[in-house]
Amino acid sequence: MNDRPLKTALARLRKANAAFARKHPGDPADRQPVHTVYGGAQLFQADSARKLGDLALRALREYAPDPAALAEALGLPRELGERVYPRVVAKLEREPVEDYRIDFEDGYGNRPDAEEDEDAARTAEEVAKGLAAGSLPPFLGIRIKPLSGELFGRSLRTLDIFVTTLAARTKARLPHHFVVTVPKVALPEHVATVAAMAGALERKTRLPRGSLKLEIMVETPQSILGPDGTAALRGLVAAGGGRVTGAHFGTYDYTASCNITAAHQSMTHPACDFAKHVMQVSLAATGVTLSDGATNIMPVAPHRAAGGGALTEGQRRDNRAAVHRAWKLHFDHVRHSLVQAYYQGWDLHPAQLPTRYAAVYSFFLEGLDAASRRLRSFTEKAAQATLVGDVFDDAATGQGLLNFFLRGLNCGAITPEEAASTGLTREEMQGRSFLKILEGRKRGL
Image (tube, rainbow, N blue to C red; front, side):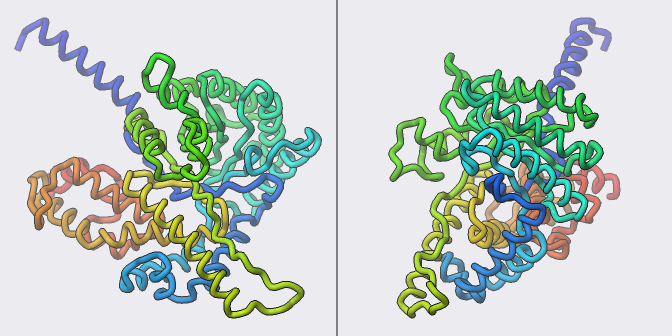
């Protein structure tokens, strides 16, 4: 049709669609870890991930030596416990930590400048050792101090020393998925300053341009809503100049900022759910990954044997009950996050690793059979919507089902053999696009 206004409108539409696609790339194509372990910088070593895994296995074998014991502690059906338990053990043996944050903030505290300088350089040396030895977790980063008026100088100095030392030892090579976590972000200037520092460090150390990625922490109401009542997160992410790849929710700082008393500061508080929903809506389809916070009740036994003596039977029961209570709380918190589509959270203690993986694996395994049937039925009929049981599927649901399997495969909850029951090939899975799968299937009909 030779209609000039229509041609103009179509040209504007193409331009607008292209701009929208650039600003909304969708879910990240790469793997997202199921957790981030935060550990004080003073404790970090090149083999910290393996040591944490060994401690986690010891806790599992002591307080849940078999599938039935774990199922009872967490309230899982016995059959599901039988499927989950060996996968948890295998994960703790193979890859106990998916993401580790070397913490110079809350887990480190305020120390003399000379001591923090030394730890910044030492941890960089340890990262270089781990990179050479292959002992680092697949995701790694450091958390610096806040960019507040009294701490920003210390924060940027630590970042400078760490990155400069690391780049010198590795010949300008960073670990894969390395990130700098910026806590207590409340102003765009907080993010912009660290982004500018990252650029300066890249030029100084000859790191590839844009290689230093940032992660912001949402810990104040000001980072949820701006002074004019609009959502603030998009502006905070934009201030990073394309470097921000993640946003982590800080449960306890946020609830404290909302004047919630300590007894009720919890990941499941309605105030936290509201903030996390705003995070989801604000950053939907931007490629920025989201993470929930931490459970602060640690699975620690109250009784310890002294002087080589043995615990009484009553003390052993107390220990088991205390650990099981903390495990169940952590399990329920992780489950709450997963239901709300927060697939990543924080862990603070090695004995939380068994319940992190048990929660994630049970979440995926309990829905595996139904999801397999739905995805297989839908792909077999290509672009036609289909009814399986009492659940109606469309293309958007198809992508959601595909994402379910991709996340389950990435974290080890679902095996490749189980994923094959969907009828999809490995190549189709790796393409990560349900629409492309449908197009390929229709071409093959």
